[in-house]
Amino acid sequence: MKKDNFKYKDIPWEKEDPKEIIFELIENNSKVLDLGCWAGRFGEKLKNEKNCLVYGTDINKQAIKLAEKRLDLAFLSDLSKPETLKETLREENFDFITAIEVLEHLAEPEELLLEIKKYLGKNGKLIVSVPNVANYAVRLNLLAGNFSYEDQGILDETHLRFFTLFTIKKLINDSGYKIEQIKYTRAKNFPTFFATQFILVCRK
Image (cartoon, one colour):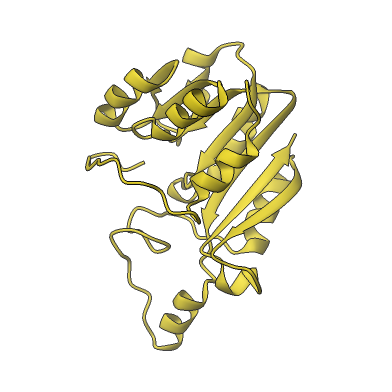
């Protein structure tokens, strides 16, 4: 979701990448809206391997140009102004809406969560992933008096919001969703301490 920076290269995702986990959660032949789709590679995988119909949106013009070649529909939007989605989506409904590493880039993510609810079908699911700011590496750095932004990762310099498991659950619940399932990356035990990402499957 970086506005002005465009660096893209097809690099295989790691097994613990949230996109790999979320891919497994999406059912075959589903209609999917991928928020923050970047160049559309995740949606392309859904189309090719699960026969999904995929719409995607992103703020980066260059990324959307690539996504247009990969998805059924790709369009430019600023998710900090979620009301503008209706200009393209109108009366559309989706089986799944994904927001993979999106909410932390928004000053008011609750506005997006409230707006997209209207685009979920009757049995539709919202799947979000966010970095875990309470990860042990961040905690250790805080103990050492260090809280420095980085080029990528949990403390990516473009992140405006930071989430623990408690605060992302509260945000989801306060926005009127019910959490069905929570998954974690890189954490078999003590996920609030070791997980790098939280993945939440939600219904309205």
